[in-house]
Image (cartoon, rainbow, N blue to C red; front, top):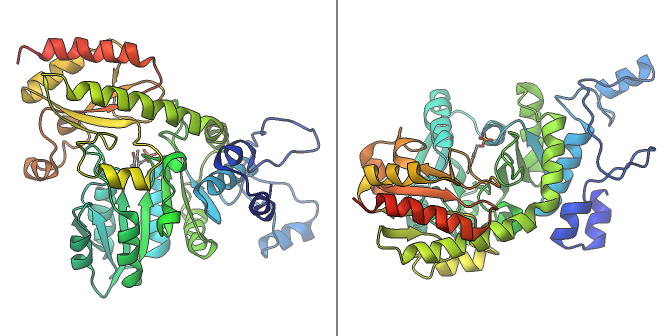
Length: 399
Ligand SMILES: *Cc1c(COP(=O)(O)O)cnc(C)c1O
């Protein structure tokens, strides 16, 4: 369906997840086709010339591909965005947004608690090209306001944060960004549009690592940037030239993933809630971090901003790193891996893997202790997960 008819239809999000972005061909196929083609054939030399002169239509799959477009349209419908631009990975989506909207001499304010690779990209790569980034506490709007400079062009955050599940106040941060004439960009990977729609709270651009929950089964890398048409044009322009485009096969996997996203998120959230409440009562656990717990400092904000608390939780195992490792090694169902948003439950020891390049002082300041374990709660039966985690905690109980 094209955009106008979608808006006219006023369909709910679960209908859009199944029905948006459908362009049935003359074959009448019911499931969306995959178009594995790098280029397109023109009917005549004149048509080729017209396409190169800007007439709408396919030219080359670095620019447009029908399967990729279908995924872009469906995800845009879910995020409530005018336009979506798909990318070859989540990081490519971040890069395309930064390169499309920033230049040397610009300043970015970013949450300290964003994906480690995004910190590296802003500091070490874009820093070499004259971009400056100030990192602030996600949960302290006054710190964001204080960090604004005359050349601040963008505020960047993730909420909930990884691995501490802190919540950023999207509405407050959108007001600060717009007061400064800057864009608010939100990495919505942890929630997906099934749980949180940042554009409704005033964000200008959303980025997604489709690699995580949108795929949902740990198969493909991909991403997207979404927002108003005029904000997406420079992003697409960068992509066409720089090249980190999404493959049609991966786009198709994500397109099908979106159809079950909201159902899967419901189960991820319900199981995470059950496990978080149970973990809080375990003697080997000092603290549980999950926005769905009444003990979470921003429980009320999470309830207002998100439809449910998410599928990721973290907790502190008594006994520090040795105990955390014994816990992890004793698990038989949960996988030790660095991914998240998979049907398979994944445990990660942040201090020695995802956050090992962060200095011990910065880790301590962020609350990432040596005993902290992150769980991306999968779709297995929660009773089996609880028994598996209980086995791990019993093994770690000696510490
Ligand atoms: C994984 C992830 C990314 C990067 O996505 P890739 O597809 O691995 O490049 C960005 N942001 C968040 C929050 C992520 O979890």
